[in-house]
Amino acid sequence: MPGSTRHLGFTLLFWIPNQVWYDSGGSYNLCGSSRCPNVDAERFIIRYTIGMAKKKPIQSKTITNRRARADYELGDSLVVGMQLTGAETKNLRMGHGQLRGAYVTVKDNELWLLNATISGTNGIPLSESEQTRTRKLLAKKREVTALIESKQMGKTIVPLDILTGGRFIKLRIAVGRGKRQYDKRQTLKARDEKRAIDQALKQR
Image 1 (cartoon, helix red, strand yellow):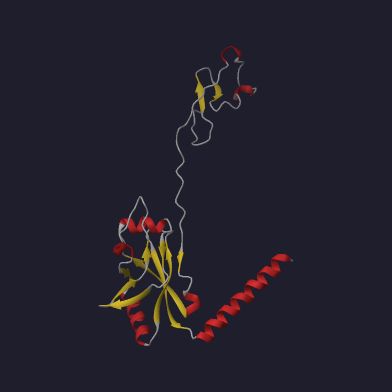
Image 2: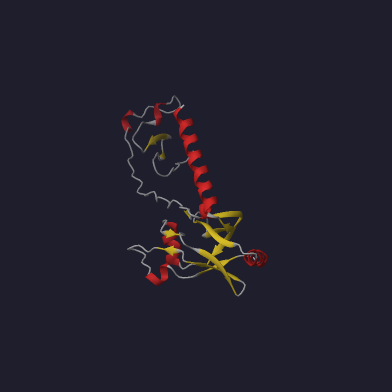
C-alpha cells in the first residue's frame, strides 16, 4: 500500500524503497512485523508536522422571545424567512439579538418585523437605526393570507424565536391572543409547580 495520509493528529505512513514501513508520527516503527526485513542499519524516524489548524465552527444560537408564551395564548407556529444585511446575519449567528417587545405587522400584504434588536460588535458595528430597523419577512402568499385573516379576528402575530442554525436565518412566529392578568398568574403558577416537581424528582 503506497504512503497514506490522515489529517490532524496523526500518523503519516511512507513507503520506503526496500519495502519497509516507517511511522512518521514517531510513536512506533511498524516494521516489527514478521513480514518486514531486519532494518537495524537503516532505522530512523521521519518526523513531519502537519500545520493544519482546525477551525472551530461557530455554534448556532437560538434567540428566544421569553415573554411570548407568558403573555399570549399561542396557536401553531410558522417559520418564515428574514431579509437581513450581511452584518446583521453575522451578529445574529453570534447571538447578538433580542425579540423582547418585538411584534409582526402586515403592510401592503407583506409581513414586517418591528422592534427587534440586533446588536453590533466591535468587529461588525451597527448604528442605532440599523439595530432596530423594520425588517421584511418572507413567507408564501397563502401563509400571509391566513395571517391577515387572523389579525382581522383581533389576534396578534407574535415572534417566538430567531433560528440561526441553518444556511439562512429564519424566524418562528405564531398567532396568539393576549392573556388576561388572571391567565398570566395561572401560567406562572403552573410553571412554578412544574419546577418544584422537577427539583423533587432530581433529589430522589
